[in-house]
Image (cartoon, rainbow, N blue to C red; front, side, top):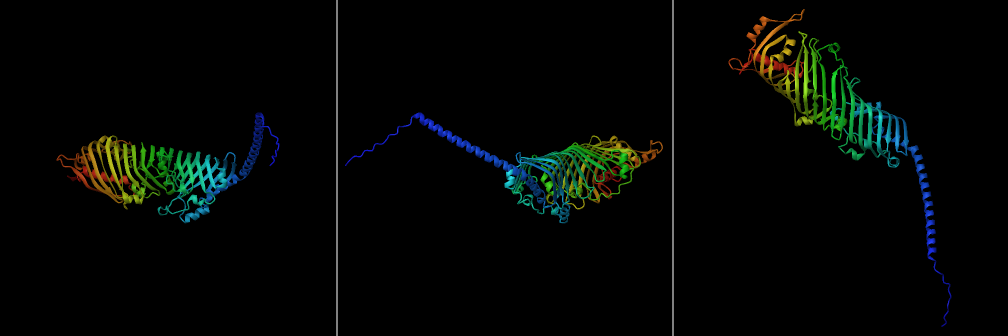
Length: 587
């Protein structure tokens, strides 16, 4: 076997520096290819971005406009109309400038709902001059039917809220919820914050053209975490789909329908975080402040009233309940340092107006709004009542000072009244200067005839204190009188009051006077004064024999024009008169 040899040329190995050069060239080529690829990719993305921006700038504005229309018109089931003059959308900044937005009530749809008794308890009219919408989720708006917004802001808006009377039995009727009404056009509305800075707000009743109106010239409000979808609708902590609300109203103005009274307040503040509604520096006063001008306008014995207080605070106030169902629900109401001033001119013709059905608890029961307030406290109140005498034309003055009052179970809710039908008020303070006063009222909320009970006592009253009333109103002066105490237990209803009156006093001596119509000077009716003190009045109780006279029972019929406190005073005075003359019951 022959061996065949094949001579092959041997390839010498590359030197190490040539290998390095080869590797470097390979990396250089690869880098250039990658850079060119990145350049093409960036160029393509820029083109796509510019294209999308052009498309978005063209379509975002109309789409936002359409979404707003869906939210307003379709969401209200046609109750509102919508008009917008200008909408400037920026895709790059994700912002929108709104000009001249107007939301109004469709009159035809309103009448239709009114006939069905299906009008919402609160409706709105809105005029916005300019508004800014920032941080719009453009892609969510374009491709997923979601309205995502960071902030809505305006300083140029006029809001009018109209309250409609809704029958209590129809308040809970079902209606299509907003989140469902806007589908399928909008799946979700999510707004981080809405800021209203210095807008105007009007709140009024829709009953008549001359109904009560509350005007706020300056309002600041911040609404945080607004979400409209099925999940938010089930969240009971939200108020109208809003998680947190902070509102400050400035310069409240209000005028009664007949323009006889006006009301103002420096501020009203509300925070949903701590659920406190606060009213600061409140005042109600006649539009005509001068007494002569006031009575020339009213022409009858109508009381001229001025009421002020530094601060009133509702704790755990449920704003959502008030907005949706006109329910005033709170744990407590605190009123600090109120001042009450009442003036009546008895020289005017009597006010022939029935006060039947107008006891305090009857007025509570007849309110349109449902009230659910667990307790109320009044701190350091002062009350002044001045009456101009019919015959003397002089002014008598009654004062209550440093009054503290607590009140429980303030409600007209039938379900709460079934559980507890009694509203109880307790009053402590001073009367006629420094004489201690305490009273307790029990109002029976389930009564059909205004039933009430009142008990109380007054201690340490002398002649000087009473003369501030007796001389100007009755031409009678107490020369001497010392009352140790007055106690009473009364009950009443629409037609009468009855009960027991107890009074201990000594050194009673009355001086009867007459006024000279020409000179205006007072003179003593000496003979009549002597007869009355000797034969009619008892100078002390208990008498010299130690036996005490009482007014048990005392009964007073009510005339239709008599007020609640007028009936109590007349019943009490009848009892005191019974004790001071010979007709008192001897114990």
